[in-house]
Length: 293
Image (cartoon, rainbow, N blue to C red; front, side, top):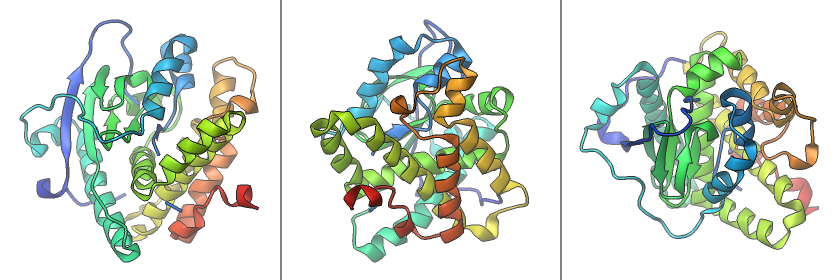
């Protein structure tokens, strides 16, 4: 995907803390919070006990209170941070394009818009939602409106999950930005309320939130179709398939348990990403429609 280099005045980029102790973790959704993947990637790729991660993940996903501070930021410029490596520069270019794509959509809908902050970190960091480890994969924290990424996760995607390519990485960023959209529109907050009042359907609601973020990622791609290159869409579909709950469970040697899904099956993730790409219409991303009937 041929994205232009970002304008440092048009993005919010910070470098988070680095945590080197303990297990070294590799680095890598009506209009939320959540991550591209959660516990299973930690179990599959890094050998982390999923039980040890559940509390941390739930803490990050359920923090939807008033805006809080993220980690202490360095005084580096956006250009210095983004120029750290090729993946970081890609992410900054994607962030700028995502801002430019979604801001006018919000303006047309007369919904207040605010840019998220992109935090790059290594191993682990403190977010506005609490402590986080890169074994969780990239995630969005609604408390500080931050997208958190350890860029070495992209090597894991390519080497151990068979999901390489620049568009696969852009899909990750656009998915997390989708959670920011859900936060700004209030969808994420409504889902959290429903989850607290209906624990039996909490996982199903989470899956729909994640699939909506996938659809929004597709809408972003569709609205920038002139920048897409041959093979890009295939890379996106491969990535969506690789991080489906059923695929991650099988690859981790676990029984596929649909009741414990939190992000959706590979088929579902591909379906909603494809819907966003084909329609280019955020109104087609209502993953909750059948629950209202």
